[in-house]
Structures are given as structure tokens and as C-alpha cells.
Length: 529
Image 1 (spheres, rainbow, N blue to C red):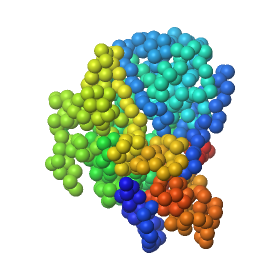
Image 2: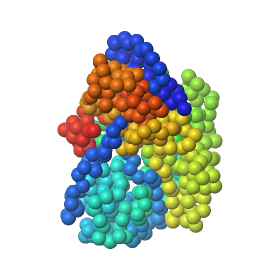
Image 3: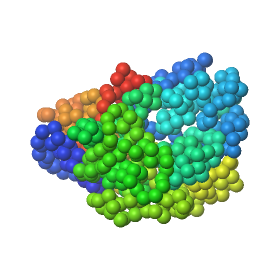
Image 4: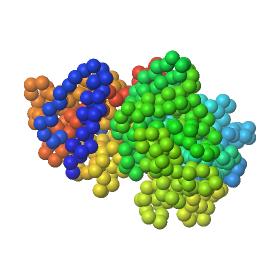
């Protein structure tokens, strides 16, 4: 498989264009065709004793650590809490009544978030720094970050085996006090009683350009983007020039690009007919979107102020190749949404239609009738039969971790969540296929040799100095040769080739822009690397 040339060829478009923006010219000579020591999740270094288990809110901008996320739906919050107390859930998703709060606070195997957020979780979800439950401001434990960071606590032993994480499986079980009506992004919010349960699901399947720091939402970081700049024009409108991460993929393998950003933002603002009132409210300040390149776009929003980034943090990006009508109304080949899919009158169901496809950390992977199909078959009705987007009490939605690198026929090393974590990345001898590429956090950290939390020119130059080297020497001293050599990526051991392309493909990459990766700059973020 020619992974090196085929999937790291964006070296020139990523590296050269970013250097050019900095006023640096570079000539790259590739001499031939083209890994990392196991990185351990920092959290795993510090499980504390669970006597009186302190509740940590440290969060990590990577994950997930579970193989699946299982949403379970109940008729009422009371029924949901009963299921939680019987050990059927890891996260209780509804606000607690005073009586339920007292129960949560009084059971040793539970964690109570306190009166500010008033939520409950199993203590076995994890109690280490950088992983486990995250107490998000205004939300509590059941949230995007807990789903991204949570996992079984390998040290804590519940007093009752019934309260074991995942019921003994590597699956996070998230309860909801209602079912869902619509999992079509255009329709969520039209049934207010089920909107919260729908949004919890949709933000796991679809991703957003920006994310708010869960413990200090005033600080907003690039999420699907690597960096951005902002300016104010003469009319008092704000322009955000956004650079997308080059490794973004939809769950079906299609590349995410700025056409998707343009389509989503403009259609939620200017598209025909009624649409999700929640998403439309976030899109209200949008004036226009210009696509400069597949990974660079300019978003114009009315007014100024921090609320604009918060609005962009609320809009999940949709795949243009699935939802676009093809009418070209927005220019540049981008049209409005297909009315048969977007208008409420038609009630389009993306799960039964096989289009429940996003770029988020979890994907809809069929349990039946075609096992493994993407975008369908992940909903189960109360009888255990194939379900729809309308999931009633007793039903479930089982989302799988987005990482398809181990699939036998896959040739794209980026067919995984852009912030995935796998300590086995690049470890061991050569393995055919893309399995060794699983773990985008490890790939980023590997490329960042000087550990500044940004892949800079010094990192790329260091890797390039070792290109085609079969032994240390000259500009590639022993320490650099040992660092860059990862035999898992090439059939001929001992010769550094692919590693250089990997590092170069991440040039200028920054995971928490515009902040430094430390808790002083970005509240409660896990230590890097």
C-alpha cells in the first residue's frame, strides 16, 4: 500500500502554504518513498485513592477511550434514575430531584456534582487527572467531554459489582429522561420535550469548528480548526479566517473541507424553509462565507465580541455531499439543503436512509441488517429490533468510536477521529495497512519533537535531516535518529522515510489554539504531552 505518497502528499499544500503565509520560501526534494514510542495517557499516571474520592474536572482535548457510547432512553427522569441506581447506567443525564441528589451523595459508588450542576455518575467512570467524568459548567457530568475522556477506572473497585463501569464492557452508558423525536439536524428542536436528548446525541456524531473550555466557557479553542485570525471591517462586522485541520474525515471516508463549512453556515442562516430553531439561532450572526482553499475559509459575522465564537461553537458542521440539493444557490458549487431532507413536512430520517454521518468522535455503525454499514442501523427499539430516529422509552442508540484504521481494505490513515487517542500508535514492527496510524494525538505529539505543543519548523527540519538515514550520522545525530525511527510504518526496518512525511503533514498544527497548552492559560486542561 502506498500510504506514504497517497495520504501524506498534502505535505506541500499544508507545509508550503503555511510557510508562505509566514513569508518563508522552501524547496522540498523527496528522495524516495517514505513512528512513536508508546505515549501513555497522562491521566493514567495518577489514579488516587477513592476514599472520599475527590471529583476532578481536568479535561483532555483528545479521546475517546471507550469503544462505544450507548444512549438509553426512558419515559421519565424518575425511571431513568431507577435504572441508574440498579447499575444500568454510567451517567444519569437528567437534573436530580432533592431526594435523588441525597441518594447520589450518600452512596459510595456514586459521584455527586454538587448543587451547581446537580448531576450524578458512577465513580467507576474514572477518577484520575485528565480522564473520567468532567463537571462542565452549567451542565454537570453528562456532557461531550465526559464521553470523550471517560473510561473504566482500572484502580477503583466498586463496593457493589453492579456499579461497574459499562456493566463490565468498554461502553459508556448515558441515560436520558426522554426519548428522541428527530435525529435529523434540521429538525431537532421542533419537538422541545425531546430536544435535549437529541442534542446530546447529535454533538457526538457531528463536530463543531470551535469548543468552549468545559470549566471556563469564556475561553474558546479551535476544534476542527488548527488556528484562526480575526479582524473587523469598516462596517463593524467580524471576519474570522479559519484554517481547518488537514486530517478531517467524515465517517464515510470523504474529506471534510471548507465547502462543508460554507454549506452548513449559509444554509442554517439563509436556506429555504423552517429549520432547527436551535441551530438557526446560532447561525443568526452569519453574513457570509468565502472558501479560499479546501482548508481555509473566511467567515463574516455581524457585530463584534466573544459571543460570535460561542455561536460558532454551537453549530455542528454537516457534510455537503449528503445534504446539498445541488442547486448551486450559494455559489462555488454550493447549494441549499435538499428540501426532501431538510423540511419538517417530509420528516426525513437519516438513520433509516443511511445518512446519519458526521465527523465527530462517535459514529452510527450498523448492528443490523448489514453489520458494519456506516450511517445506519445503530438505533434499537424497545423490543430489540431495528429502530429509527424516533426512539421511545426502552430504546437505545449505540454509537461506535470513530476509528476505521483497522478495517482490512482501508488505505487512509486519517479514517479516524481527528483527536483520537491510541498509545499503540507507531509501536512495534511493520504491520501492513493503516492500523499503526490509529491515534492522532500520538501522531501530533510525535511530530512535535521539541514538545512545545505546536509542530514548528524546528520539528520538521529535525525530521527532514534524518530522511533516508539507515543509521545516525551527520545532521542526524543518534538522539534524533532514535526519536524519529518508527519501524511500524515501513517494510524495510531501520530507514527513516515515512516519519518525515508524517511530521511535515502536521506542520503548524496546534491543538488548543489560541492558548498555550497548560492549566494556567487554559483552565484545567490535562498536562501536555
